[in-house]
Amino acid sequence: MIVQEKLDRRGTLERSRPPHGRRTLGFMPSGSAPADGELNSEAESTRHPPIVYFNIGWMEHYAGFAKDDKTIGGHAYLQGHPHGGEAFNFSVSDAGTMRGYRPPGAGEKTNITRMGAANRADHIDGALVIWLAKEPASGQTLIVGWYRNATVFRDAQDGGNDLGDERICYSAEAAKDDAVLLTPPMRTFPVKSSRTKPGAGFGQKPTWYGAEAVNKLVWDYIRNFGSEHQPDPPKNLDPELRRKVEKAAVAHATTYYRALYGPACVVKSVEAYAKGWDLEVFVDEQPLLVEVKGLMNDGPACELTPNEYEKMMLPEHRPRYIVYVVNNALAELPAIPVASIFEHAGGERWVTADGRELAVKPKMAAVLSWPE
Image 1: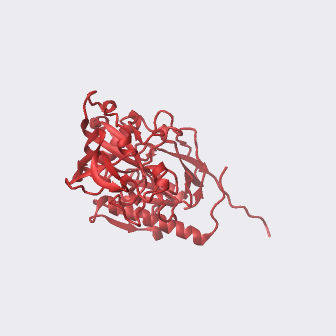
Image 2: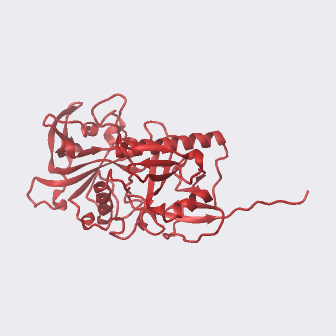
Image 3: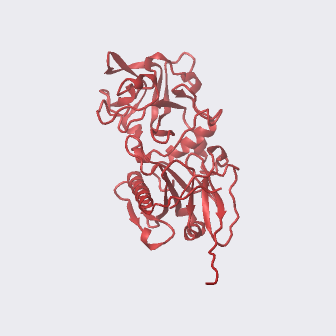
């Protein structure tokens, strides 16, 4: 599990397969996502509800004003206050629902007309609300949760909670069973800003109405959430640090799959047996084969050993083989490690839920010797 930082930006998957040597896996930018329908051929994957994205501060629980769960973010209010109105976004209201604040609260209307509502409508029903927040260590904006079948209001509503001398208002409401808050290890789906992804990412305002290519990927991710299918840089030569990074990455993957599949999931470590993968995740009779890669930073590349690459490419393993890459593996709260989870998407393609694809670059090596 060797740290690399190189990104192949050509936008194609290298298919050269020399007989020896390691393979460097680079992450393709999300703009090189597969064509619509390749990840999921079911027709409903393209029929998504009205979607709106709200960019809020980062928290672990969003369950109130907890001293050990401050709201972290770049919004002006948070620069001088420990919590923002989003602190209650996943706390059950007096009405038994979830009510979501989005900055700046009552200071700005939500343009529900862009979501399909009539010009004079005061709300739209059946919407999907995506809650985004910037992870403190990596700076990536990740999906932290969502409301399905939500009501989104044009004007923010009185939420019944106070923030200092102001009332917290909410812009979206959903039944508590339709609200999903991801625990930090489960927050793996990044959404790009328009600065890095012009025309297909959120802008300066905390409300974004989406782009169709992103919406399709997000909807496919949420529909299938919890299903069974989801020049070289210097090496890290410190063996003790390498072991810590590897251990942290494996622990992250173990926590993720147990949270994803619940108590019935069995995660078995097979690292010591050189099988070509590190974990076997049993959710049915045929386990997922998870190769875990840990990185110290947010670099977009890692390496496979010859054995790992061989096992990854075997036809009988491909449908169940997963490359689970953990960036910032040793991050400490409030920062968190961030995982990129590459699953087989047909042929020789491994793709994350947000559309990033592995690019494979051969790396040759040789042993030199001479007479004594």
